[in-house]
Length: 382
Length: 234
Ligand SMILES: Nc1ncnc2c1ncn2[C@@H]1O[C@H](COP(=O)(O)OP(=O)(O)O)[C@@H](O)[C@H]1O
Ligand SMILES: [Mg+2]
Image (tube, rainbow over all chains, first blue to last red; front, side, top):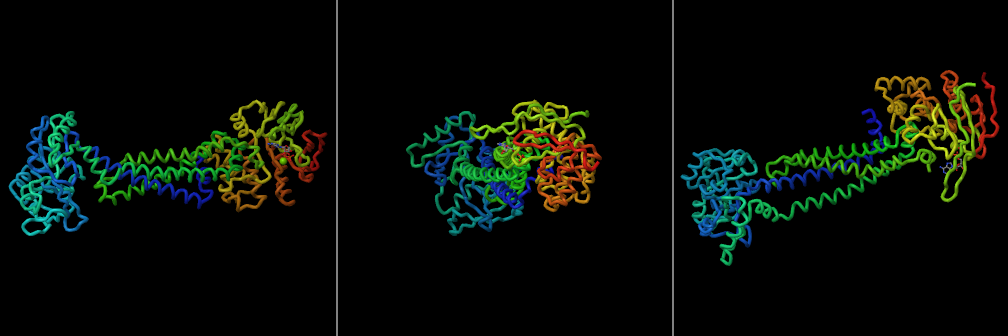
């Protein structure tokens, strides 16, 4: 590109101004990358949710317990294949920042309802026969270096033990499991509900939520309606959602993340549009005589338009690349928020598109002005 | 009689100023032959720059024929005119009009970017043009690091580098002291005599006009009886 030195020099005509503009665009794209990354990671969780499953929670709130007696009633609903249950245990290992999604389950029911779980038959068998056994997810096992036979204490932020009033629960690692390679699902562990239910100090005979697999995913709405109808006007009314809806409403607890992200980014880019647009316009205004000289030398109107537009594209793409690159580097630091994910490629693509739109939106008005510029008037300073 | 490079017939130029129409050039006729060095003189506001801009294809006549370098340039589209300028005209201005952020050689290279020459050929031609104006050793300097005379030499090199048919200069020494002005005029004269460049130069300095082979006087938008010089230096 033989015009590159000309465009590059024009870009750096006012160094300080260009650096500040560049910095503000870089920061905007860093923000874009991080926020959209968080958003995309959450959405990915929702998208990965199984449509073939329903989650039944208390109508009152996610954290309200449900009586175990509901199981047989739910099982009797037409269209239901299996019913399993899980309970929020709120565990961490040694330090509150080592949160682990450990849940007490009836392992045979749970495996049937959640076939994504892959564990060696010996491991499952060992869990069946070890009362205080625990099956640990691959990520958790690796993170804490747990081996089969290790005794692992987990601290529950909710449940105390009947025997000693303590919140520390001891488990014996009996095996590992994977979840179709999804690393976000295996910073987790499964242990026996029977052991948990007997040992806990309160609310015995309840579960946190039901996991219901369907015979036919097309029937999910009917089955969900039937389950909720079953418990209508009882002491424990339910709310049945598809796993996807459940994931979404779980996220809603933190507010509408998607909306917040979009609103912040809209504000940032709206401001940036004016800031960069103004800078580009000012920079072209200062260069009117120079652009006129290019035209006298035989540069066409369209050629001059292109030079200015490419300058703006160069500025925006350069800044976007730096900003998104920084986001890519920093994104793993958000592991505690979004789990083990890399910045999704879709965010980088979207960022590039936004950069191009920004470049054209801010570059076109001054480029158009440069194109329209009348040589004689410009040279005479009119 | 030698071949006409510039030929203006009944050229009228009017400007619209709000509601008012100002006629700057009135049915002007002019012929300039290949190899001439013409000085356009006249009082300020008489229409010299306007006339020069018509000859150089920077502006369009309101009516009349403008034939330069064998082309009816009054009939070219704006794109066609840009191409024509690139091919046929080199411009030199009073205030040099160099790109401040580019080095001398990059400034001189600008017209060549529009040609099909490759990088090496461009470099060679730029070096040759800078050598002609005596600035080979300032190639890497930016305009701010050059004196007025040196900057004007760079501008002349830029005007020359694509080997145009015609050099068009609007008060090229208007911003220079006497001594530097004489050096620049001498350079233009050399370009005319030794390199055969046809030059049209606007000036209001009679001493500058003496370097030309012919002086034309513009007054109130018309040519007043041209004075043929035998060429003082011949
Ligand atoms: N674009 C224009 N619009 C209006 N008036 C113009 C324009 N260009 C030149 N003029 C007028 O035409 C006259 C001649 O201008 P010009 O050719 O620049 O004179 P000179 O170069 O001889 O000083 C002046 O009165 C000037 O104000
Ligand atoms: Mg003038």
